[in-house]
Image (cartoon, rainbow, N blue to C red; front, top):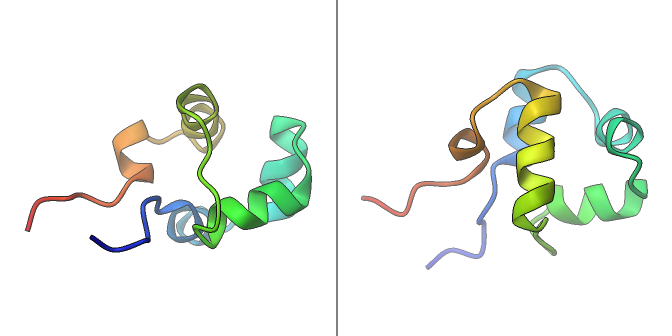
Length: 68
C-alpha cells in the first residue's frame, strides 16, 4: 500500500488554496498542515471532516481510493 493516504495537497491545488491559508482557517500550525500535505502525518477524522467543510468538498475527496 502506498504511503500517500490523503489527497490534501491535490485538493488544495485544485481549489487554488495554500497550506498557510488552510492552517489559518483551521487554527492549526502551518507546519502541521505541511506534514499532512506531504503525507508525513495524517489528520484525525474530526479534523478531516473540518478540512472538508472548509474546502467545500466531500471527505472522501480528501482520501486516495484503495480500489484498483
